[in-house]
Length: 114
Image (cartoon, rainbow, N blue to C red; front, side, top):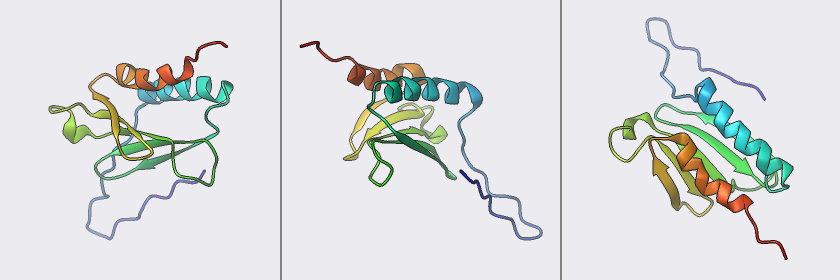
């Protein structure tokens, strides 16, 4: 995976981007590892934009993401900066605590035994 940061013009400040910190990535990648081991997820992508950071999860590489885990710091004081968004655009869970927000995806791992 290659990261390319835009080079600022002389006299301009570099554009600010939002990113996941090490603690947040540890939580997200822990869940990702569990889902890969269960055979549910196969690939991921990360995007660091000006107003949000996005961790997208794929079942197959060449399709739309199953889920997007987003961090939008501007929503920190309102609805919560973390959200899980489904493939169809529905917000499944939103909140301040990343672990609590990701529980909506952990429930998908629990299946009844036949």
